[in-house]
Image (cartoon, rainbow, N blue to C red):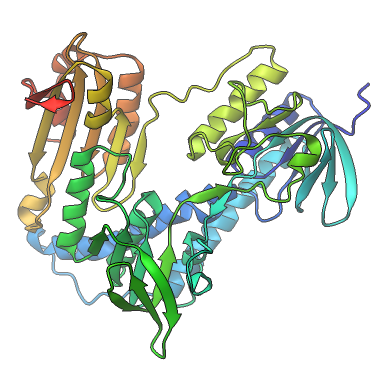
Length: 461
């Protein structure tokens, strides 16, 4: 019989933590899990799920406009921010209940408290001061927004956390950042009728994405009326009688109702007791793990955003299942972080898997690039000026498709299917002999028979 209170104790009730706790408990292990805020983690409570609901809400004004081209006469429309928040909160509460129910049905002990390490096998439950022991510990506490405290006036700004709970919809907003969160919220707020300015220090938004996707989205956002300021940063935020005033590095004074900072996320490892337990972290505070998600302490594992490997919810869930296979099923399994499909729920969306043209050009001597840009069928009658871009990156030597990128409606859905295709190692010849589904936008992926251009030694020819 174990001398510990628990076979496994999980700190953090997000996607990775809940999955590892629930599955371990279903295997008959004695499991405890602690979460200091709400079960479901960033994704469910104040991340991808409520964000996607906001995306849907923000698209309706364009749907109403497009309807006229298809013969519909749409009456007066009005948006109610408080009703959206109320509906969103109800759905999030429902989902949190499902997470709790899953844990409860698996017979895991659920603690609503912050938990901190005392040593490699002992956890303190902060709310009660009680200590428990565990043979194995999983840390899955995720990350939190970087508040950029070096910025004068940062305390006047909000992060994505607060954006989901604003009491009133602002008339104008300035969003700092150029990644997923900044770009998605810029499109959300614009769709809901807010005057939006996006400011980013880099030369182009979405730095890790293919250049055609980045530039195409930038242009689409500006056509909608979103102001995008690149090569600039906020240097100070101050309160005014009307709201807030932000001064930028280039000397602009921007008067807005709200300033939102979307400048990255940091691992939630402060005051967690890692040093006392002997768990090593890197310069950003992320827990250092090996190929099996094991920390520097053999019985302590870390999953998800707290390791700063790939900050995506499905990755945390995948890492959790690999942990279960490795520790409880005698089947050592390394998380596979290669060829992860992802989407940016901007408007239009970006869906992507594999290498960008720029990265592929550094890895392979010669590439074939297949690129199509066209007006989607829906826009023909609506009269909307928008473009879909599709791009396949092919290693010329073996004809393997090493990157696929889409800008347009339902790009995220297509990226998921393309993820299977690239994971299976399909070649361009496999794409070419696949019959098209007509009329769809996706048929372009299997009807681009001739390269648009080649890239040799990183240079287009």
